[in-house]
Length: 552
Image (cartoon, rainbow, N blue to C red):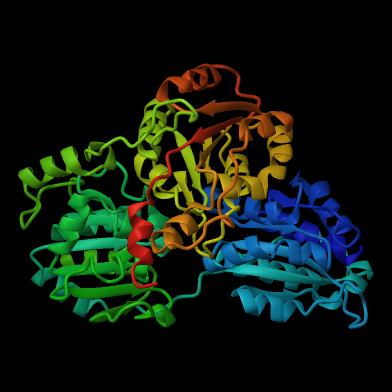
C-alpha cells in the first residue's frame, strides 16, 4: 500500500468525514484515498476559499477540518485562510504535499511557513506513515491548526497496509487546577462579571452554574457570541460591540473573570471598559496567554471547564440548582427586567440615516434597519458567518444566533474576503440550518468566485452584502483628516447581477420594502443561494471602528 493511501485511511479512521480543497498532482492520491474510505470531498474554486471552508466547517461542527492542496502555489494560495485558522486555534489539518528538492520550482520551506503563521508542523515519514498521520489529527483535535507535510517521494513509496484500528488515546491527566484564590475572589465580590472567550466555547453549562452560584452576570467576547443565548443574565458581547447597558454593567463590576479570553483591545475597548478598581482574573489552559493584552491581578492555569467544575465543587453546589436563579448581589428582579428590555441592540433607539431616492441619487438603507429587518424575516435556527470590515458589527449585533455554534467570526487575522467561503464550510457542517454570510462589498468581490462552489453545493445559503461602494474602514479612518479617498472608493456596481451570473438568485435592496423576495425565497426549496446587494448609507463610520481608530 502506498503511503498516500495510508494517510487517507488513517485520517478517515480518526474521524475525518469532509475534506475541502483543490486537487493537483501532489494531493491527487491522498485525496482520493480519503474519498475511497468514505469522506466527502468538496471542491473549491480556489485554495484560499478551500482553507476558509475547512475553517468554517471546523468551527461550526466542532470537529477537525481537513484541507487538501497542491504543493507550492496550492499551499501559498491557502495562506491567508490558514493564518486565520491558526490565529483562531481552529482544529484543522492541512494536507500539504512537499517538493523537497531545493531547486524544484515547487519548493517552499513548509516548517518555516507554518511557524510564521502560528501553525504546528508535522511530517509524514515512509516508515511511520500511520503514526505520523494519526499524531497530526490528534494534535488538531486538541485545538491546533496543523500543516502535515507530505513529501512527494514519501507519498509514492510502499509501506505496510493499514486498516486500523485507531489506537485509543487516554486523556492525559493534568494537575488539579489551583482555584483557591479564584474561589476567594468570587466569594468576596458583590458585582462579578464573567467574560467568556473563544477558549470557553465548550464550557456553557459549568460557567452558567458557577455564575448562578456566585451571582455573576454573563458576557462574551465577539468570538464566543451565542454561548449564553437564552440565559436571563446574558448581557451579550463585551467591548466595542457592547450595548450601552452591557458597557454600564461591566463598568460597575468589582470582579471580572476572563474565561478563555485574553481581553484584547476589542473586548475591553482599549482597556476603558473594565474599571480600574475591579479585580481581573484570567483563566486559560495556556499560561503564555496570561497578561498578553493587559495586566491581570490573578491567573488560573487550566481548561475552562475543569476550573469551573473545581470551583463549583469547592462551593458545594454540585449537582446544580435551578438555572438563572436570582441569588442576591446585583442579580435583582429589577436588573433582570432591564436586561430583558435593554440588553439587545434591537431595543436601543437610533436615528435612521438611510437616504430616500432623490434626483440624481438612488436610495440607500441604514445598515441597522437592514439588519433588524433581516432578523425578523429569517428563521431563528441559523448560522451567522461574518466577514471583516466596517460593516461587521451590524449583523453581529442585530441578528441573533441560537447558540455559540451559530456564530462564526472571521476576525483573528482581520482579513476581509474570508466570510463567504467560511459560510460554505459552515453550511456543509450544518445543512439543517440556514447559513447567512454577512460580507462587505470589498470582501465579496475578493471571494465571489466561490459562488461557483455555492451553486454546486445547492445548500441553503443567504449572502448579505453591506455595499457602501468603498473600503469603508479606510474611508472613515482617513477621511476625517482630509486625505484623498479615490484609492478606496469605487463606482456603484451591480453585485446582484454578478451573483446571478454565477447561478445564484440576486436581489438589490435599497429600502426595507425591497426585501419582499427574501420571504418568497425562504418559503421555497432554497436550492440556489440568494445574494442580497444592500446599498447601505455610508456617511459616517461604525462606532466600534471610530473607537479603534482613536490614537492611530
